[in-house]
Amino acid sequence: MLQGAILGLGNIALGGHLPTYHNNQELCKKVKIVAGADLCAQNRRRVEELYPRIRVYDSVEALVAQET
Image 1 (cartoon, rainbow, N blue to C red):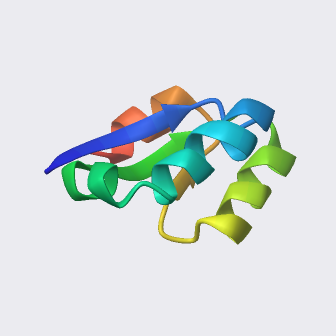
Image 2: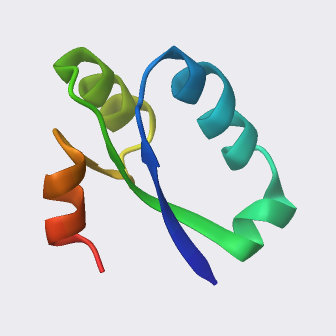
């Protein structure tokens, strides 16, 4: 299974990418979104509320430093 991250957790990710991903069982069998990064604390909090299994970071650098 591929693992991936989303860079930028704003309106497009919250209203489009993440819900579409999570509602597509076939895609979820092939790809697992494990992390995301966004500079905006409000966006990070919203993702943490809606998708608690996704690890959230405040920068791409922090994400890359922690994820394999």
